[in-house]
Image 1: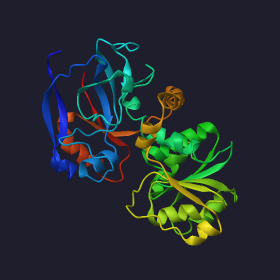
Image 2: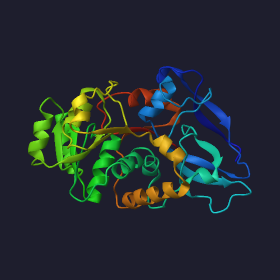
Image 3: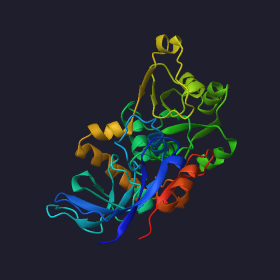
Image 4: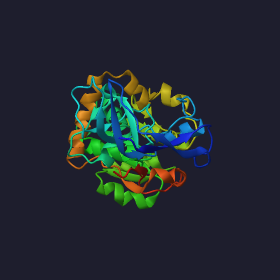
Length: 331
C-alpha cells in the first residue's frame, strides 16, 4: 500500500484541544517480526487526556501520538510472523499510541479477538473491563451472594464491574451522584443504586439488610471515598483505581485501628507490564466469552473521525456524558 495515513500528534503538554494536531505520514511498513494493523476504533479515556496534559505517570518522548487503547485489523505481515493472518481483529498494546489510521507493531504484542466481537467493543476491552476483572479477582476472595460497594458506578469501569459481578453472582451497591442514573443502572444488573450523600452508610445498611460488605472500589477519592470506607465491614479492603474528584483520601485513624481496613490501588498499565502473556490471555478469554454473550459493550455517545481530533477531545472532557467518545476509522 502506498497511501498515507493520518495521525494525531502533540509536541508539548497542555490543553488537549489546543496542543493536538493531525499530520500525514507514510503508510507503515512492517519489520520482520511486525504486522501492520489498520485501526478501526480507539476510545478517548481520561488517562489519554491526562497524558496529553502531562499529568500522567508515563510521559512518552515528544512528539507523541496519544491513545492507550484501540483495536484494528491486520493488513500486512512481516516475513518472520507466524500464527497470525491478514484480516484478524486484534487489540493493540497500551504503549503504542492508537490515535492513528494504521501502525506497524510487533505481532507478539497483539491480542487476537474472536470474530464474533465487533471492533468498536474490542477497542474498549483492554482498560475498563480488564480493570473491573482484576478488581473482582485480586483483592478479596468473594463468594456467590457476597456484597461489594463502588462509587462512580456509572463510569465505564463501574458498569463493567456491575456486569461482571452480576455474571459471577456477586451483589453490588452502586453509588452515583445523579438520581437519573438509578433506574438505568438497575436495568444493567445493579442490586442497589444509591445517590451519594451524608446518609450513605445508613442507606446502604437498610438496602442490604446489614449484610457485611468486604470490598470497596473507589474511583473518586475525597469525601466520597471516606463514605465508602465507612460502609465496609471490619477487615475489609478498599481498592482505589481513579481520582475523579482530584481530592486525596483522608482516612481517620479509627478506620485503621478499630476496623482494620486495608487500602490499596491498581494501575492497569502496570498490571499488563508485570503479567505474563498466559496471565493476560486467561483474563482476556473470560472477557471475550462475556463479550460474545452481549456483555461488556461500552456505551458510545459519539464517534469522530480522526480529522476532528480537537472537537473529539473537547467533547470527551465534558461531564455528564451518556457514553464514551471514540475515534472511528473509515475502511
